[in-house]
Image (cartoon, rainbow, N blue to C red):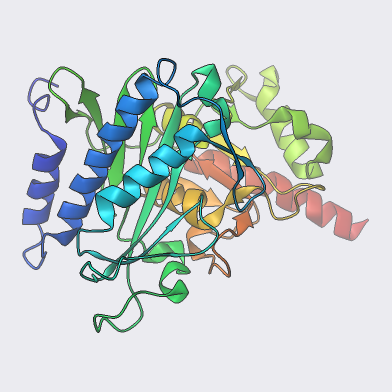
Length: 343
């Protein structure tokens, strides 16, 4: 720790860029701008109880959910930090129904960004950890100076060039990967810089934590029910798995990334396609977890990163976390489906 405590986020990004002689510096500049937006959002989150920013705006977003004031603050802060940089051809936010075009007065770039401005926002008023999630691609439409299109946003997650999240909790932590290594930086409020605190995060192959909304138990796949009972049983493990569910995906996965475990938001009888959004939440989190040695699938052996999105707000079931835990979950689901087919 003594060697890395003054490794700032900008310096770490710059040193990573030096490992790639052909790098243009654009991706580094993008990550630094996201870091700036994260500081602004963090400051507002930390004083939310004092400022007139808690509660609802009175509007609904594209998902029919009540929009919180802090959601829109985070959404606007990210756009203000990124739309003028000249690095993007198009953007998309979970808070907007359609893609976000770059203003005509700004240069059009070769990158695409999709983001969830404030994941877990239902927890805002209760002072529970929330976060920002982002996903970066290169455009696939011709780079001829014209704006990007929906096609650029609907790429499979495997095409991501970088992804990350920021957790606003007891401290503010910025975690990102450019595909090779996952690194975490904690915001030092004394001088306003992100400092390297979690270098080259590696996820345990097997954890001891499971995260799922057990209130939906009766709607689950029978194989998932048996898997959860297996995790809870004393005779199957040295000790049962611990149930830890915050209800904020970014916070649940951040904990499991550090300690090992599995996060699940399955499809069920009421939500046959799951509830979490592929391009804003599942893709970036899967990219990060895989880069740390973990795994992310739909529970039926299809890798989340191989899904080809068909719409901006597409939902998918997701099981994400330690590799051995995901493998065992898939085995339970597969065995149950085989039993049903044979009966």
